[in-house]
Image (tube, one colour):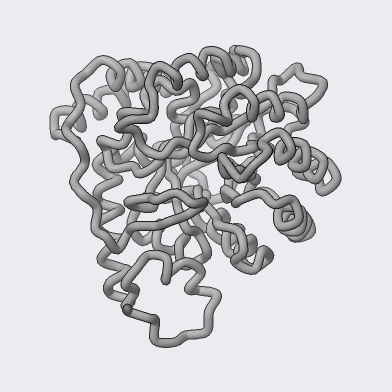
Length: 358
């Protein structure tokens, strides 16, 4: 991103977090953007879910909840963008303040509560934007807070938005909607995924499940078993955490909500590694949580991620971070003798050997 825009972000960060976020969205909608991002190093190419990704770096859900600027985010180097979570009916979310910077910890706490414009408004924006010139698009589905039938909400999401998505995400892992994480329990998850897979019908769009980082080993095992049996196409590991590490320094550390950013990098990567092992590498994984460097992205890939996403680090390091991560990741792959990113996926689970460089 040009230096002028980076300077503007420094000013925006002086504003309250949610005000800063809304202003950023408005600026991205209104201001001219730089030309197309430079071509990516071919070593970063990945084919996952039957889709061709020029690089493995995506923008996580939460930034563009309502599909306002997703088509423009490829200019900053993202190969895919995930919008949402989107709920069936519009809802305001939780009372403000509900978003907190933890600058000392390079982290954020949010308790947004699935604030959403709803399926109809998002579908209209997607139809108007079309498919030309946009990054690969994921649509993250949620449920309304007051809904009595969570399964029906997700099934409605498939019907309303499935045809516009390159992939769909069933989000049952936000800590800010009462009862949502209970849908990760084995029985509830089996019923939910069966209904959503039936609603989807054929093999398109790919269907992913986004899980929480705060899972006991028994829950991890259950989710892996259910995911493999259900026929879904992948997992996103992981959402924000309700845990509060003792290392946190910010005065806002005690705020309720989901913690994201730097403190999440180690636990989310450990969970990713567990899920790769428990699914025997049979399900593609998207690694999320605390990524702020090429080293972080590479660690998740070696732990089992085919793709990665970031968001919180952009708050502190700006969108130029995307290009820096890609450049460093390419260097790390080459230094370790990998000719393609795919060869590095799950490398930490394999016995040490000379990697195939052809």
